Image (cartoon, rainbow, N blue to C red):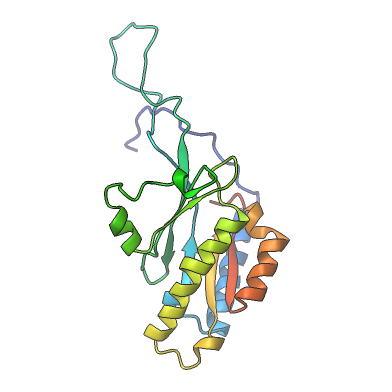
Length: 206
C-alpha cells in the first residue's frame, strides 16, 4: 500500500452519515442550473478561502537520537493572512484577493515589495480586514464580488459573444460559511447581482 509512519497534521473531519446523498443532491442542483440557464464552463467560478501562514512550521525535524528536547522553527508561528483564490470551470485562474489583519492599507504588503507591480497588473486585491482577525468579512466579500467575480463574468460574456449578456446567468460556488450564508450577504447578492446564482459546497463535506 506504500504507507509510511507520518505525523498527524489535523483532526479528521467527521463526514455526515448521508454524505453521498448530500453530494449527489448538490451536484444535481448545479447540473439543473447549468442546463436550464445554459451556463457555459467559463461562467462557472469556484472560490475558496485559505489561511496562509507566513512561516509554516512542522512538528517533525531531524535531530540527535535520544535528545529529549527537540527545537523546531515555526511551531508557534501564528501570523498569517487569508488568500482567496477563484478558478472557472474552464480552467481560468482569476486574480487573487488577500486579506491582512489590520485597520489600514499599511497592514498590507508595501508597494515597494518585490513583484507588487506585477500583482497589481494581474488584478490582485490586497485588503486590510479592519477587524481583529485576518478572516474574510462582509466588506471584503462584497469587494471580492465587485472587483473580481462580477467583472470577470461580464468580460467573459463579451468574450463568448453571449447574445443577451444582461440576462445571462452565471454560477458562483462558495463554501457554506457563516458570512456567505448570512441574510445580509445573500440579500445584497440578490439585489446587486441577480444573475449570479450562488451554489454552496455542502458543509462538512470537503
